[in-house]
Image (tube, rainbow, N blue to C red; front, side):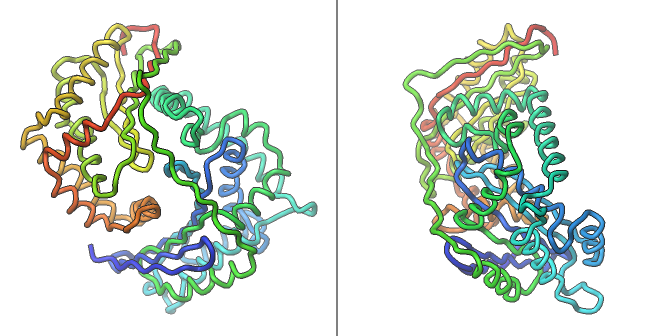
Length: 427
């Protein structure tokens, strides 16, 4: 769509990327801390962004923060936690009006930068130097409620359990927010050292998206980081293991009407030049209503209530998720594997390939239609040798051949079969 990408090094381990796109009336400024996913630190790290986004020493309560955001044309301040391969990604972002639409020509983007610097480098702390107790307790409670809601959503629970078993002993097997038990065990004393560690040693990506002058923003962050004794960011490549010689099978029982069957596959290493083929292969297999899993396993044979494939590129794993009647789980697994064999053998029609390309290319191009999608896209690109725009990625997908799709499918090896077996027989 014609966005301009500019990259600057702020300091050791801190990179500033400006993705300018004049179509938007808003802009988005995001600061993301990428740190190795570890069970010991996941819960404390995950609690920091929501706590820090509430207040700062300059804006020490909700009212003052809300007033300031209102002064910035109703800007928003948000936080989240996610996984990117074996990295835990902690993000704080400000979103609001682009500079050229400010009534008096103010550099609003610079004010967003000052606000983020305020919450990141000078968060509100009490007389003992700790984060406020009320903020800590509220965010701790909300983290537990979020983890409980994921467990109560059996589809999400089954997918996460399969990932835990598939990646047992690996960082990717840890929940992005840590375990429920680890969150409950947290104390306020752990948060300040975690915050200081992130500032010193995390890999930090600053993204300015939309329409703004990037130079004053980059300069402000450079000045802020000059005061931090940065250490070299710890190299932490994502592990891409080969599949087990024999798939590991785990069945758990719960009082649910509909069983959940999740098959976990590994690809091993995926060279950058083959990424498009793997993306497209997962869509051909189970990414659209035209896919083999949907048309055959769900529609033709009625073995599943839903059946879809999800490919995690950074980790090199593919999950096939399905909701089945307990008595049909074995047949559903066999048919899922048979459809994968069809793709491996190159039995993909031109219509199937064209429908998959259209769906995937449309998804890639719509990334550029909103700032949140662009943020996620460019953040996911940070470990690549060459940064691709969504348009370039779509062009690469369009060029993939049926044989390349088959070659990608042949690299998929079944590693884990997880079944959450329900006691009922009807959905």
